[in-house]
Image (cartoon, rainbow, N blue to C red):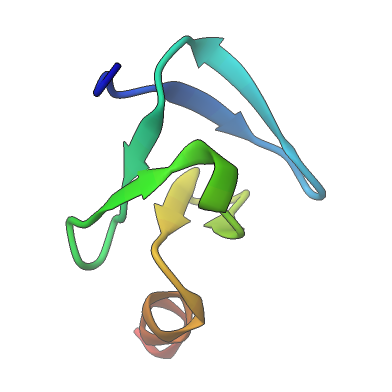
Length: 60
């Protein structure tokens, strides 16, 4: 498919607002397939590729 999804990030899951197969990491810009999306910030409504990018965001 290769279409960017729009999501609403919730505390324990996410809601798909616009269908797609991936989102983009807010730190690295890497594509994240939805089935591999494990890290996000509810307050910032941002996705992170891995715990590394999520921890970088926390440090800022």
